[in-house]
Amino acid sequence: MTLPQLTSPPPAAGRAASTRPTRSFSATRVTSVPRGITISLLLAPAMLVVSVFFLTGITQAIAQSFGYQPFLPSWRLSLDAYRTLLTDPAVRASLLLTARIAIIPTVLSVVLGVSAALLIRRLGRSRSWVSGIFQGNLAVPHLVGALCMLLLLSQGGLLSRLGYAAGLTQTPAAFPALTGDEFGWGIIAAYVWKETPFLTVIALAALGRGVDHLENAASSLGARPWQRLLHVTLPVIAPAVAGGAVLVFAFTAGSYEVPYLLGRPYPATLPVVALQYYNATDLAARPEAMAVAVLITVLSGLMVAAYLLIAGRLARRPL
Amino acid sequence: MTVTGRGVPAGGTLTKEPGLGDRRPLPVRAGHRLLIGLLLVAVLLPLVPLLIWSMSGQWRYPALLPQQLSLRGLQQLVDPRSEILQGMGTSAVIGTAVAALACLIASRRAGRSGCIGFAAAASCSSCCSLRSSCPGWR
Image 1 (cartoon, each protein chain N blue to C red):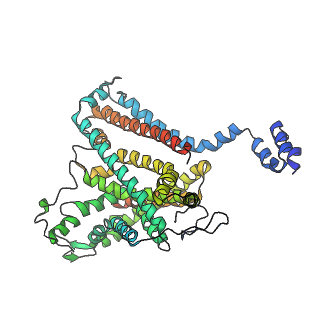
Image 2: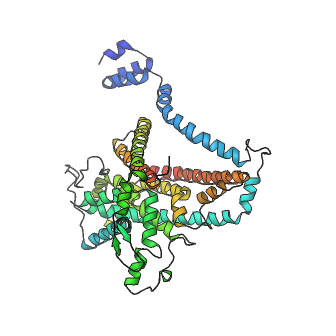
Image 3: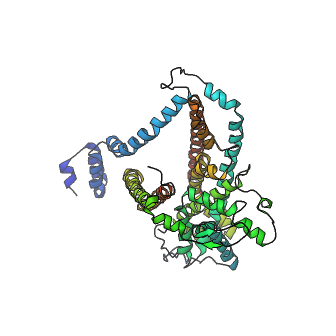
């Protein structure tokens, strides 16, 4: 343990060695390269990927949303695209629908996911295969999930056939339109089906970390089961679940394939509207498409900011 | 992949630690079993029509089961003209590469061995389905 002082004796390491001789070796190793350089070197690959693929795309989108189209002869920078969005009824209807199909699945899947995790946790031997089925659902892509919902919920789908067999409906049209409807029930169902297992897995992972000890302590101090749940279990898993919920919200608000398959062309969600503008034969509509994309990005950014705020509060809150 | 916390075996029982008291096992009532059964049905039910459709030749509206079963869909999977197997190969390569790169890049920041398998499975499956469902993609 005296070796590090011989090889490199920077003042900080020397002090550390004198006060805490048992930890001097690791302290010297860390401080031999300045910490800032080490961190930036280690972060460089991740930052490179983020900046090349993410920042350049965002910059392009913002520039084009202001009318930057050098491939067109008569382009000029303006706020016209954003003005068009303000007056476009498709965008207005889309904002409502997007909020609906993001908020409802997020809330439902948080409630269902946490309840499922609390239930699965009580299981003994069957726990591993039950949680295995939940995790297996994570591997099903959203595209396939949307297709499943189409085959299950549409007016010619399995539920409609069951309704006929039970004598509830006589024709396909008598079954309520759950896919391709104005409210977005099919989209909501697909997202709840996909995101509940995701949040269950997150909650289960958060429940593993020594929550039992805390719960036992609470019980031995006289907490009733529901008090233990409200004041110990839920606060412990809250930060992880809140993070998962923000991911779910950002995903459902920004994802494209499920609302495209299960929704209507009008009102469509914001990502679908962006693609409609983008695929328009008129190249001059490109700034509008990018403006919608920027709008989605800003909304997602606001969500992340809200998450950081909430997560910080939750993590700091004493149990 | 089983997600459990550190020190908690997959079975869900904690090893006894002195000083913390016995862990009283949480009771599993019939109601809980029923709820879990319902959850499992809800998770698996949407996959049922997909499976049946993949093997059906004709399945008109009011029937609960297909009028004709056929292996046409599955034959199309392995038909070289559909290029689906080829697409699956491409997906596997892309999925593996993405998972490996993402783990390489992310492990420096928040290395958790558990997330590697998950990332690999997730990216692989999503790529696979996308590519194989759209064989025209290049």
